[in-house]
Length: 197
Image (cartoon, rainbow, N blue to C red):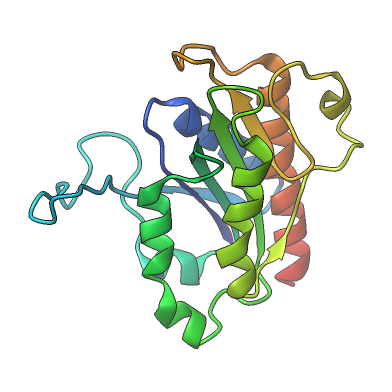
């Protein structure tokens, strides 16, 4: 069955929960399957390394995961209006895929979590698009046909799914945010399957 990669980095758990919701949306589409992957934390001391296999959660992503997928959902918490360093570090290592055009023409969607409504939800999603566009990927957003985009008081943008975690990162993913994550996964899967025929 064609797989769509749901690649995320999560520090406090919200992005991980969003990834699972996006994956649920993908798997609601007949003929589509989700493959959950994450990236390891990075440290300023280069001799410190994460274990080769995470103790819990999704396995670490390998370049083969990107090559094998028919689409990508990419998620990261916001760090000053940009993706978190571990996710950026991962993408900085995808030059071989860029050289052979392995991702060109595949659809991609994005999701993020921020501590405040004005903490960079949209700039993070837009900045996450940049390496994907360099790879030739096609960006899939959330259209306003999703009514939750017009009613949400927390996260949710046309650029992708988002979550307002609060300054203590203790706010749960809201009902609208959950619905938008699932809708994003479903939309990505539908587009990926059409492009993969």
